[in-house]
Length: 258
Image 1 (cartoon, rainbow, N blue to C red):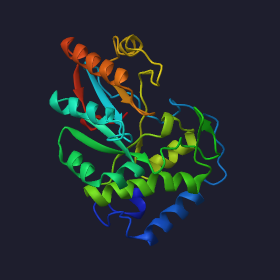
Image 2: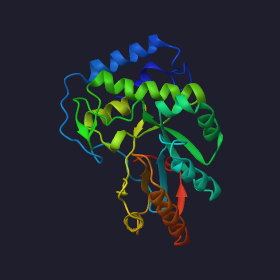
Image 3: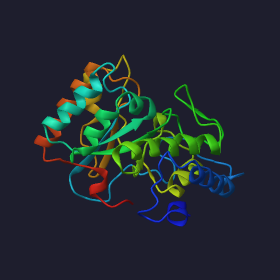
């Protein structure tokens, strides 16, 4: 059941941070609907997570978790490369980054190459029972999960004027109940179909190997922990190589959902 259609019409009212009453009401509806449901899946490819586009075309959708943007500079470097090479991308932003760089968010949202998506208030894995992923504690219950998703969506809307359609959980991890809640709120839970290695010890060859012969319509989400210069250099090289092999880059919204 999609509560976005039930509680709010498509255009009005907008779900801004300035309307705490509708925020509370929506949270109560979600809590009542999903309370007591027990998840049986936990991972980055659980039921309901979209990792592929519906196409047989030789295309890739690139996503970037931008929460380190302007800190180490590597996320900014990657986005500047995408813009210079005219490569569309979905940019997932978290609350800490939004609060620090609202003007940058507004500028990126105005660039038709990019679509702004939701990374959550604290970039937590999406759990209804406190599961962890990669040492990261997940949301502890339905209310915590709701706040993680919806508060950040409204932050994005307050600056860009548009609610984000896509959501990517911290570490890319969900349980299937959390995915249903994401969808009930009117959003699409995304994941990456390519496992791109990251971290301080990752080598350039490991990243390049991960990009070899991707499936048509693959969604590739980059980021997570602060991006390293070696990682970013390898990604840039891989994308240019794929383009020379006939791959086209698109935004997730360019193709209908599964």
